[in-house]
Image (tube, rainbow, N blue to C red; front, side, top):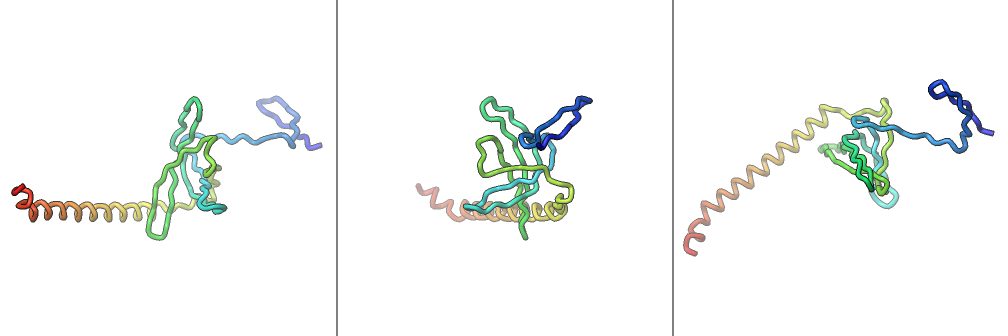
Length: 141
């Protein structure tokens, strides 16, 4: 038999390890590894952090923020995980796997901000050009 004696708060229990289950405890702020199903049988993992527990009556949900770091991009994404989630799983992120380069991620995010600011500037310039050059078309109608 696969029985083991376990002591919990001074009480010794004999546990049949064939039927024992490990229960994971999570709290807001815990670092986790997120497993995400991408295509048919393809999965990828990303580092993340638990940011909220939503105690919905019918479907308690864990909200996780995770980072997808690419060669030239850093994407911050959010997922909701509950009993209906089939494409996501989480486990605690071991200390030896905490390998996010904070400065690289910030630099990549800053580059994305600059790119979007340039796009916004270009759209505003086109808008001003449109208003200036086409104003006579609007005045005649």
